[in-house]
Amino acid sequence: MHAPIETDALIIGAGPVGLFQVFELGLLEIKAHVIDSLPQVGGQCIELYPDKPIYDIPAVPVCTGRELVDNLLKQVAPFTPQFHLAQEVQELTQQSDGRFLVSTSQDQYFLSKAIFIAAGVGAFQARTINLDGIEALVDKHLFYRVKHPERFFGKRIAICGGGDAALDWAIHLTGKAASVILIHRRDDFKAAPKSIAKMRELCANHEMELMIGQITDYEAHDGQLREIAVTNIDGEVTKMPVDDLLIFYGLSPKLGPIAQWGLDIDRKQITVDTANFQTNIPGIYAVGDINIYPGKKKLILSGFHEAALAAFAAAQYLQPEKQIQLQYTTTSPKLHKVLGVGAQTSE
Image (cartoon, rainbow, N blue to C red; front, top):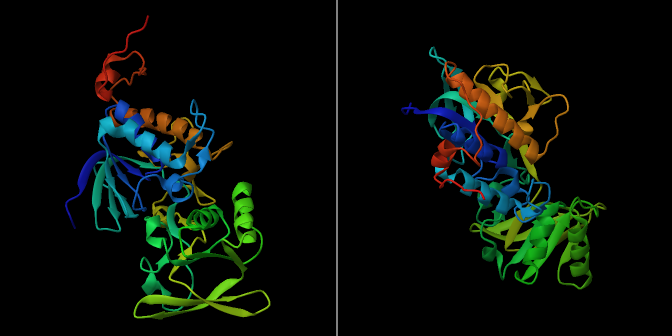
């Protein structure tokens, strides 16, 4: 066992709510470490709709998921949070002194006084294609997410899926890739109407091809994908040469080992006290889509509110002898110092 990282607060989840939790804790001078199962911060915003517009962030008429995450990272920068990415939380045990020992899938250990679960709907894992041996092509010629779009320029691309991610990338790569084939099991799509209309326009102009069916076989030689076979609803098989295969069957959220931590759970969500967003275990809080309570609405702005109340509750939990004062970033010299900004003057 590696020596654990000791911290006042450990945040599980680096999506928008987890990032704002860093900020709210930082205002109260509580430093945090952040764990996420994804290889980058941003949660659903980055994985599912990085370039889609968001219209319901207060005082921000419109921003993309990526812009929201970038601005949150700027906001938490004064507090220098430490991120531990591409690893899932595993075990949690409470120590005799009340602190929580948490282990991760990368054999990292944390000893924290308070835990904030901001894991959205759970740890995201891509839904995979089930063909014998095809996992050997992952991140070589089979991809579940796009990190470097230019890699597909000039290639023969097949894209599977019927949601926003599949259509967005099919549209984006049309004209850049040598050819783009969109494959979906039915002629019905769960994507933005504008994207569906654009996809059908490109198909009508023979710039992209749409195939209704499922990939049932493939051929590869020396680690290189050569061909896929698509079977339609009538059982007819069509074989076609491809260089790369992009799969967007969606992300499968799993609560994972958190479900074994002794928390009260209702329909795969963690129940909380809405006065402080604490779980049934003192010192463990749940904010954002991972929690449930009467009237719960799964909105980013709701998670921001929950993070603020959880931070104040945790500050009182960590220092029960101290009176926690509500201060305003507009006027508080102390908060200006914490944020590293000069005092603002008003006329």
